[in-house]
Image: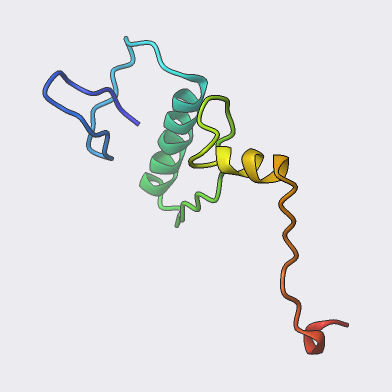
Length: 88
């Protein structure tokens, strides 16, 4: 998470973070978490970042995580396949 400069259009891991600019709660929590991981790595702790999160919010009902709400509203039902031989 960083702050785009005037000539930039995509945020990457190399995008600089400007602490003087206002940021969303998500950006602040992501930046703080990344700083803790980087600190732990520098202290020699082996680290792995797993990002399985889903960000839920209003506004984009037909794309991303918003599709979950659209499908539920249409009474989408999901039943995972279970292999009988794996059931105990």
